[in-house]
Figure 1: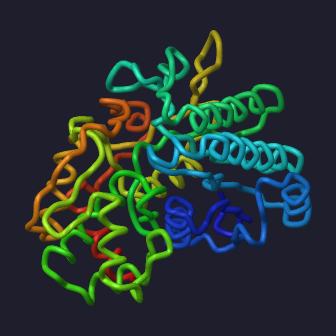
Figure 2: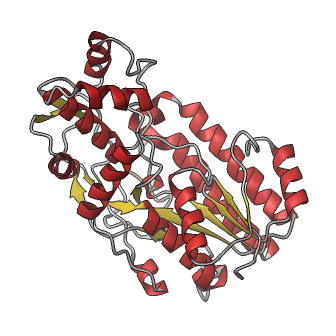
Length: 357
């Protein structure tokens, strides 16, 4: 990419897209074409086609997606498969029709099989059944990966798929229903701290910024406490889903962005193809290669937030896959390594959370 190349970052206000845009700007790129969801609905093919025909972007970062945690994946299965298929099908196809030079598609390591050998290499994709809770999302993302490979093989395009591990960082989603595990724990433990310390001002400020089931900071304390209790948050303890035993890997979103830009600058599809035989699993895992239990992450968050109450785990709730650790040897061989460890990242994210209330 040249510094004046025309770049479309799809999903530029989300967790990953905003980090990619920021990374590109820091590196001197300046010619961006950006659209909010309100300005361009990527699930509508005619609108996407018109946008590409008019704007003619040269490079595309496809970071727009419909995402969420275990609860959201369980409740909104149709949304997860339909929205993600439509977004990626429309953008990838329009990129091909309009001669986009290079595209980066973001998958997710959560789409590897439930029983995948650990740590997970890229070639374990589609080798056994998927995790049931996020099966619709996984099928959609796998289709996106295969679309990139298939367009490359049939049309000679240069579309690369990357598989980030669990991400967290600025502009994360802290909704108690739809957020991923780490931001959900940060918010739950922060709210539990407010109740434990009887800090009504901080509690109301949080609820005003991020209402829960329509209850905001102007509601009565009785209403606020009642709705938070539904999510396992009370004056003495905070209850988290599952046993706390599953192992998870986490990557700071701004590092994911740096890895994504690095791949766009330095890696081509041909670099990922075998010298002979079938061409498959050309995607790249992006992660740290390090893991902690959910309980260890919760204890770390508790320490960073300064919460003195109890942490409890509700074993009646699902754990999800017991272990998912990425093998990042391909990424390392291409020249990129992470630098921010999770203790630093949690501290940074909690500060961002408080600064953006």
